[in-house]
Image 1: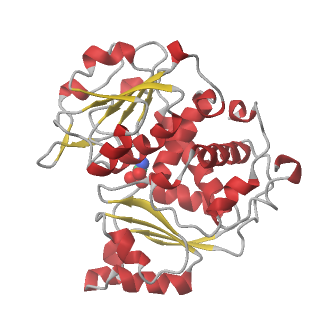
Image 2: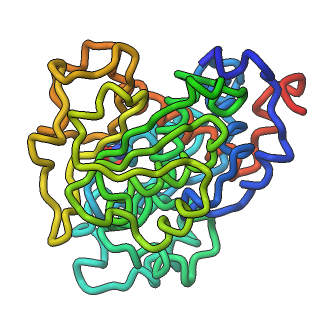
Length: 337
Ligand code: CP
């Protein structure tokens, strides 16, 4: 992460303070400044430049996961515990009143008394709005149905900004601007939607985004408007293998929504060490993976997906510190502007 801090290691507290006491429901809440400052804070944390062990010792985070998760729940819990905070968890909806018909609205009301912040994952898009109705503490969307997964997108872009800090903090010469390939359907896949939403912030340094999908129209209404208004060229193609040589970054996910339901990608959309990738192409995948991402890519320079998963704990720790207003007091004063 040193590269992220080379140009300006100091953090803009006025920007990070915009998250104080805020819920994080959508990637659309972030602009380039906020994403950049969060990534820099995550880099300082990853480099262990801040004495954070007790920063959140008076705070409790509820991790309420009504849909299975490995990375999101455990990285949030790890992030919270390593800054002295405490966690309470729902790892299985069947262990809550939901199994007896209790509403998310009433469960949200209970969280007001039990915790200072709640992270929610649910199979239904509407769960976030239902949980919010009586909730008075910050809510972080940990993935709601096919809608959004904003903190995954923060982890995705933290990995990319470590790889090429000039995406956020510089100007890439025109002929080297990035060509990004997204495999999937942003309108129906939450990680893909949140990733694309943040990608549009870096239009000065992105040349094209090509969406590879078997669907005729993989964008939903919200994204169509955002993409139509972006200076980035947005293309659609079914020919991933024929375009690999043009892609600098590939973002993929495990299953695709193909119009009538979720399915694994066909072989045309799978990648392995035998794929004709450029030598310096990096692959992002939020994991867990299916057959679309062969394990023989793990030991190649294309693998940015493990870095992406590792970085999630630092960017989530940065987010928690900002929401709880504890950046000052944690980060040494000479690193704050
Ligand atoms: N990337 C991600 O959301 O993984 P989990 O489903 O394991 O949380």
